[in-house]
Length: 262
Ligand SMILES: [Zn+2]
Image (cartoon, rainbow, N blue to C red):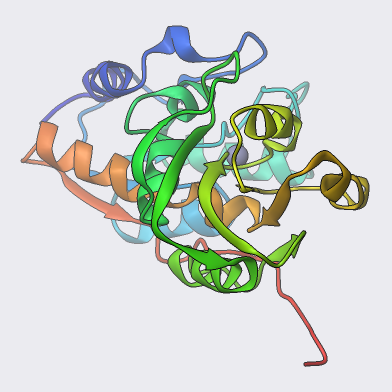
C-alpha cells in the first residue's frame, strides 16, 4: 500500500506545487507522511461531516481541494477543542487521519478545477482565458443559446440549487469560466470577447456594472463550480494506485439554498 507521502508526490505530479499562489497552503497538512493508506476519501472541503465519513469508511487519508488550515482565510493560532476548527483538527489527528490539500495549484493545473468546470459545462475547444495566473478557461457551446437557457444548462450540469445571473437575454456561445471566487478576472473575459462569464461569489455591484462593461455574468456558486474536480482527483488516484479504495464524499454538498416566488 502507498504511504501518504507517496500519494502527496503523485498529486503534485498532477498539480505541481509551484502552481500554488504564495499565500496558499498545499500538500500534506496533517498526519504522518509514513502512514500506509488503503482507503481515501475525496471532498472539496474537510468538514466535521467529511471527517466523520472518512472514519466511518475506515479511511486513513482525506484529499481535499480547500486547505483545512492556514491559508488566507483560515489562519491557525491555536488548536483547542472549544473552537470549531480546533475541534475538527483534533478529531482528524486523534483518529490518525491524514489530510492532503490541493488548492490553487489544482486551479491552474491542466485538467484541474477549471478544465473540469469547462468539461462539466460541455464547452468545446477549452483553452486559457489569458489571466496572468492562468486560472480561468474559455470555450464555446456547440450552438448558441439564449442567456436564460444557458443559465438553466449551467444549473443542471453543475447540479446547483440555483444560479444568479444578469445581462442581455440574447444568445451566448463564447463562454468564460472561473471556478470559485474568480469575479476579479471579469476583465479578461471581456478582453477575450466572451459572451458570458461563469464563476461564483459575485457581488451586487459586479452584477450591476456588468452590462455597462459588455459582459453577462452567471454566479453558479462556489461549491457547484469547483466540485467537478473531486471526480478528477478520485479518478487520478484510482489510476495511479489501483490497490487503493477511493471514494468521493457523499455527505459534502452545496449548503446554499435558493427561495424564489416563481
Ligand atoms: Zn474554492
